[in-house]
Length: 264
Image 1 (tube, helix red, strand yellow):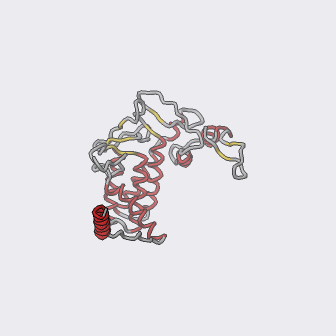
Image 2 (cartoon, helix red, strand yellow; image 1 turned 90 degrees about the horizontal axis):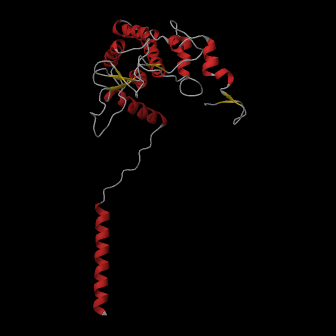
Image 3 (tube, helix red, strand yellow; image 1 turned 45 degrees about the vertical axis):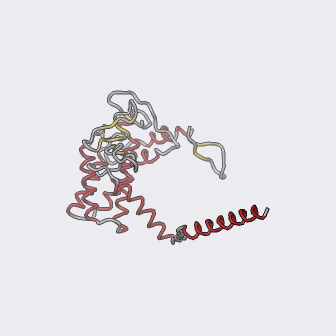
């Protein structure tokens, strides 16, 4: 009995010794850093810029559809048209905030717009995906191998921002502004109505794709830019009958005390 007690006591002492040792060898955990609102905004903007700046497609300098950290070579030249619009606007923020050198950014933006000028376009609209090595369309699915007017609108809103940001400059910056203006004005928005009072999402030279842009969804910007175009604008009725579906966009329910929009 005494022997049993002795072994139990030794076991307890060894266990306590091991616990103490493991505790003292654990690295200290740094307390979380508390950021002010401005510091947090800086961090978010810098990290957003990092994707479009550090991981841009190598030739076009536009945004990649995706970036695989475990295998960066996957889809390494697959450019996303809409995402590139977000990237162009993010670079403007980077210039304004002093995150990137202005001249370096102008050079990169010029490369990007030169690429877009020579890439495949379909009645002025770019495809959803573009091969960053040569500007050729990369099909988005089996039939979508032509123009994508929604992705194009996400790009064009950025082109307008580029135009406005550099319009009072000179030299390379003014040339950049002028090219951005020409690119957005080259989109034939009205052609994508097909003679109807509604916009169609796609056009393919080989397939019939009949997806109308009807609200409510992410496509409102497309109608805004199509209506605002100084070269190929759509009539007002296209918004009312197409996007607003002749009033069917409204829902009789009043979750917040007023009529709401709905998508079908």
